[in-house]
Every structure is written in structure tokens, then in C-alpha cells.
Length: 73
Image (cartoon, rainbow, N blue to C red):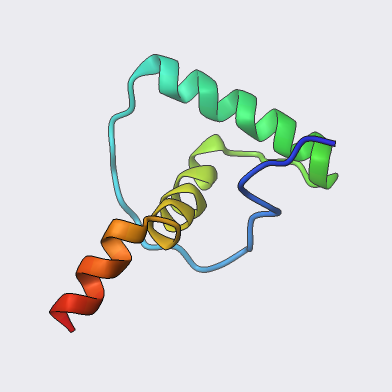
């Protein structure tokens, strides 16, 4: 079993944001969604739904950001 950084995507009410992604990144999101679907048994219909949890995970694990955030608070 592959150890992905994401788990199943929570069905939460989103806030609409429009971004442009390079084609290679979109292909990677599609591929990641396919692997995640195999790992969790839950299909990822829209690869764009991976972006929010990926950014959230990135921010949560960025130690420099956490340190800077504590210094500001």
C-alpha cells in the first residue's frame, strides 16, 4: 500500500476560487486522484478537489510557517 500524504477527501462546503494550473500539474493531479481512489476505495471525480487538502496539508506541515505564525500572534 502506498503511503500518500492525503487521505479520503471530506465532503465540505467549498469556497469558490479560480486558478490556472500548468498542464503537467493538472496531469499530476489526475494521476494522484487515480492512486488515491485505488487506496481509499472512494473515487475522486474532480482532481481540483485535491488542491485544497494538499494546500492545507502543506501549510500544516510547514514548520517555518508555524514558527513565523507563532511569532506574529
